[in-house]
Length: 233
Image 1: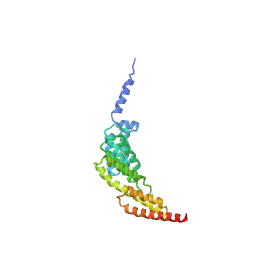
Image 2: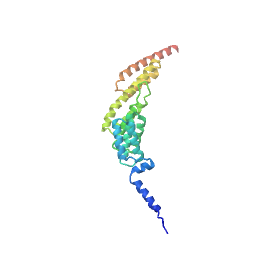
Image 3: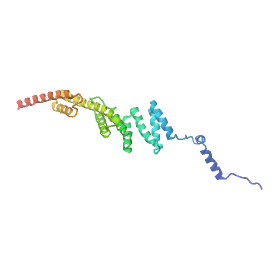
Image 4: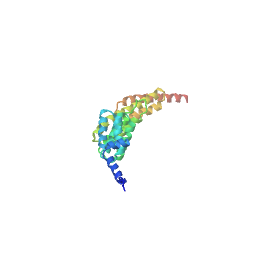
């Protein structure tokens, strides 16, 4: 009587596993996938893209490290470089959010002075002309002041001082612009308030004398109005 011998099911299963583990080529051919890039390879790719100005590619690489390898030794650097890539791309609001997250998660990291400076720069790069809303100027000023107060000896504090002066000048110019507008519209009381604010808060950025001149003019106009009103009464 003849016997037909077959391969045990266990042997077949083990053979298939061995074949699949032997290399990514067979895995790719069977399943159409790709072997995941290592965090080191992604970091190298991201840094190369960042340095060559290919910011979208850099962003993609750093985001993959954050998402796929959050506990790798590259994750912290990737988080910071992701913010840098977004900043260089001009996506300042997104960059600010990533810098802000980094500061909250790693408040004692030695890169924090740089992070705070960059948070200020994200607003500074969006400062508009003096006839526009100055909310970005105010926020940039606050970040630079915070940096100088917390890390006065930092290299970035010195850079922040220069940017801070620009913020003061822009804010003073904005107040003068609004004050002149009110003066032109003969709203002398409102104009007077703007010029007083400049004298009180920005006495050393070059606008002091102009504010003082307009303040005197406002007071003269207000005095004239009071005289006219008194004669009517």
